[in-house]
Length: 496
Image 1: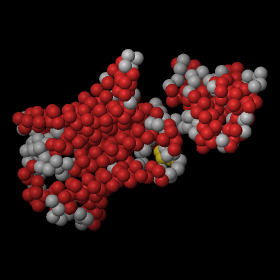
Image 2: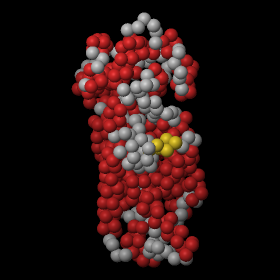
Image 3: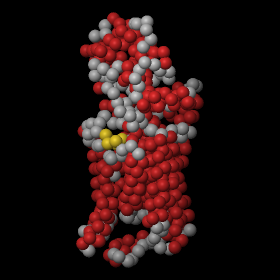
């Protein structure tokens, strides 16, 4: 709402333009979600208490753990509704819902939260600690993952190189000389078309001294910016000037889509123009492969991409199912899961901002995702809601998030990993969740194969409880580990 309000008021008062800034709206979303959570939290907790929606504590399996946690019996659960509601309210105020990535992230948050809500509701009705069957829960998570994966596959959120970076030009002298030569010719050609779109002052300088752009870094940067501005134009391709170009299948597909619909999205338009530029100046512009939206980056390596094709959809499903269940497994101590989630959200919120900027993503050799800027606002809202919930969830907890919150938070983190094109980095960003999930896998495998347990109890946070660590000590130390993982992921961006 504030974004559109700012746009409407800018012609009258230019200061309102700040309402359209990503950083301002991210901060506003975080503060709003935090305050909304604090405002409605007490009333929601009282209502849950009145409805007797309390947590049930199992005594079987580990008696010692029951003695530690039995005082929590009856504490209101389903508190995840507080996180989701505060986030949505904040996004309504600060988000820009014409952005498809924001809609996708909000959809996953709410739907997975709904699955968790149903699980919690069944537990309350049955007065037992078991809700939805594992199969039913997996089916719901897989369905959400499939929807997200299929959307990302058929509606690319990014494409191979669009705007020209400094490293994309292999021979500046050849590029500028060819542009000048074709531009001054009377014969229609691809180079003449690009030349016509350059600013007059740049053309004059190139005519007078084309060598300047070969050795002068400032001149090259000015020329590169002018060329990128030309590539943003909607009608670069004309049959008269570019009909002789040998185009790739991807370029033909984009041209066909333009003829069918009359226009292309900004991302598609610039990608088409980049392909035209590559075809026209193959001797001086780096050629880029298609299908970047179905490739994943290997963290820590420069432009090492794994092509997956249709298998990418399955990867998205795996990420959604794994991340939501990993947070669910971590949700066993007061404040543990929401605090660790905050650390992961901090990392992915920063990453979303970086990959949404062409300059920063090019500098760090990251995949550029133009529309990811709005995910920064989404991350900010969820951060604020998480901090607000932690206010009530810290030890001794007044409310538990339940599966409503853990599935929603895990799904949101996984979705941000997918939509920022940093899928594999999730293993580092959510390192604590990986450790928690891995402890369960190892425990089950060891017991089935050897008849022995590795840990006193899994997930691993209960192991440390049974070793004698206080709940607060386990939680805070695990928060520290989660923060270290998040910082490692951000620091690793520069390694490439």
